[in-house]
Amino acid sequence: MPRVNIPSGSKWEPLLGYSRAVKAGPYVHVSGTTGPGATAAEQARAALETIRKALEAAGASLSQVVRTRIYVTDIAQWESIGQAHGEVFGSIRPAMAMVEVSRLIDPALLVEIEADAYVGE
Image 1 (spheres, one colour):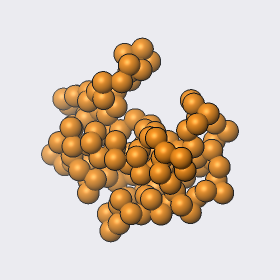
Image 2 (image 1 turned 90 degrees about the vertical axis):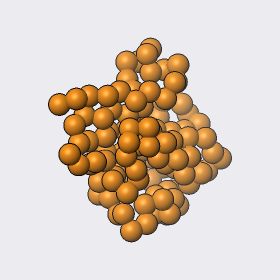
Image 3 (image 1 turned 45 degrees about the vertical axis):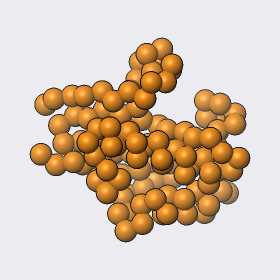
């Protein structure tokens, strides 16, 4: 099964030993992704835009996403974060999980999102 690492150019990737995304056979796995913003919803939208770009770099698209995982530091914000997810995925409707975590790597971060896509053979 061929494997392709898709980097983002972040200084953290070589230091921590990860890639923004990995395409392995018919799957693309996008690492936990954060984004800037003053609110959780803004951060979710920014993270999803970064995920879109990573998918495109791997030859995939949002329409091929089959699962997302959303980590939030305040589950009370679930609705605005979920609405941001819904705006992006609309009728695609991937399987999704949203869980509260005690914190993310930077205290300013409120949301982190992972995505998995199936691109077929």
